[in-house]
Image (tube, rainbow, N blue to C red; front, side):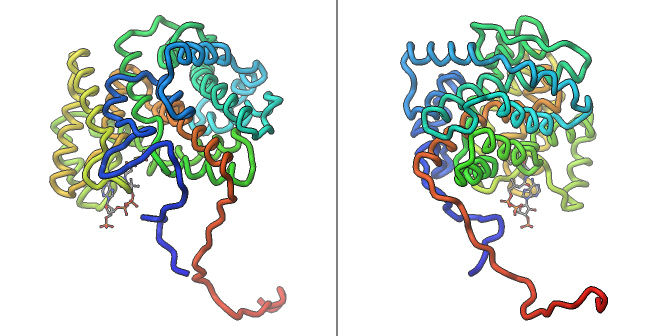
Length: 370
Ligand code: ACO
């Protein structure tokens, strides 16, 4: 038995949800470029869950369910008030999702219908949970979700308590479309491994949130913004990046296990970042990002991934850095839950082997002789 480090190149599941072939990402066979241009996040969530784009009445029904389900139990809000105010937002989200399970009497039901229903419910509740924690940690009261708003608009409304700007809503919605699913990425794999033991969707999503949190995965968008803030100005960019490269440090937001010729989502985020910079009349972050890209791609051949330009996009939308990865989670929940349903529909426990590299034939030594 020989292990492949990081499971590179290992095909570990069959799936009909999303594909990456020849550098093209498609959800249910529809190119991400097409979806990024035309689809709303709600349409994409429906597509991932049900395998086809919704009709108008199906979409209306899903939006109605999102509105109905968006409120979170008051017990969970009370718990959010007890979390340390400076705790990591992904840690708060991980605990919060786990807490939601305790107040859902259907939590243990892993049937297809109930899991699908809980996927919709969780999708509606996640933005409310994140926005509530964000306000509580700032000493503000949570803002209740408002009926009739899209998921992106409702999130922006609940964090600010103000009427969301249509430009920000459109940009966030497009970012949610781009992050919704990505084949067998690390967090989706975690979710599938968890429910493959016949555990429930809340457990699967909690595992996935813990996996997304790391800076080699979803946490990279926050790490990119931290780097941009540390650099500060365009004239300091070159020296900073050169030093990192000379030190053999990783530049966050670059590289990808699967895409070696560029992440197809990155160009959309770059375009959004450019447009928002022009709109806001401040191109510092965008210009710094372009400079970093030219150095890193020029010297290492590494291309930006989905997380690189999303950092400047979210900042230009006025969103705080430590909400970036939770926003990724809001979007990716649609993919996680589609994969959880697919796994449970055709389940077998996921239990690979390890290549043993330890000692053999060791004897037990009594404690007094050690
Ligand atoms: N900066 C500098 N060098 C890099 C980078 C980077 N961002 N990414 C890869 N490399 C180098 C590695 O050091 C390695 O060089 P070596 O062969 O000389 O040792 C080589 O490229 C291969 O990289 P690996 O880390 O082995 O590639 P792997 O497929 O295991 O990892 C990953 C992919 C985790 C995305 C990696 O490129 C990385 O750490 N990037 C930065 C973090 C990041 O942006 N993560 C988000 C990914 S997208 C997402 O999950 C949403």
